[in-house]
Image (cartoon, rainbow, N blue to C red):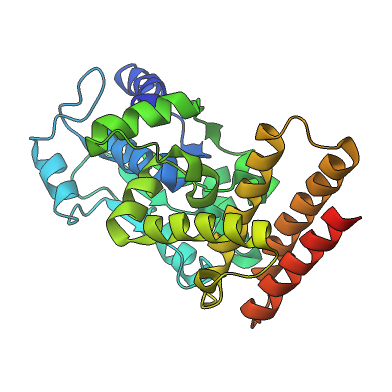
Length: 305
């Protein structure tokens, strides 16, 4: 497992159950992929199949571990969303496979990533397996947003608790991981976790976030939408609005001498911005330029009043 110290307690707790042969039939890992939710699910699945599992991890050398690494273990199944949803046919096929005899003579193990994307039909199809699991079967359900998972699903799983790292912990981890002294942790609320920050830096997304932050600060100060925010495409608009929220929040934190009425108005405005971001996710098209110009106009009027 990649060195993610905040996952160690959950990993150790599961391996203790495994060594005592007291494993549950289903586990819910309610942890965003950006914090290592997928990594933890796959790591525990590998340990479940390992023939020489140690105190805290799979051995990495046995035949089962090698097959998992090669994505060719016949008793390991990984389910991911097909488009926006995990479809009923995917779950029916999985459930059918889990009723067969394990080809390697040990367990059958399944990982369902982003399980909150189960639709009504696929969730119902999974329920029977959760209620009547086959012998030596373990399911790991990973959810980026566990609150969106049906209660009938989550209630039938043992929850693996993970204590999220503090921002200081994230800063320290990023410093070691990236061998850089810059504070990248400011964008945690935008990207969703330290692993996502590393990915954003590698893909160039992080530089766009920096540009958005600089652009919003300039635009709010000048009451004019700056050039860097005039060409934001629809795929970037969510990031841009989340960065705006962080800019507004930082303004409230730093400017303690601000007039209380203006402070209250900015706080309400910031909340409205985030509500707007949520609505954008279900809108077919977005007039980004018009949206951003309206934001600057409303903010300017707010200060004038």
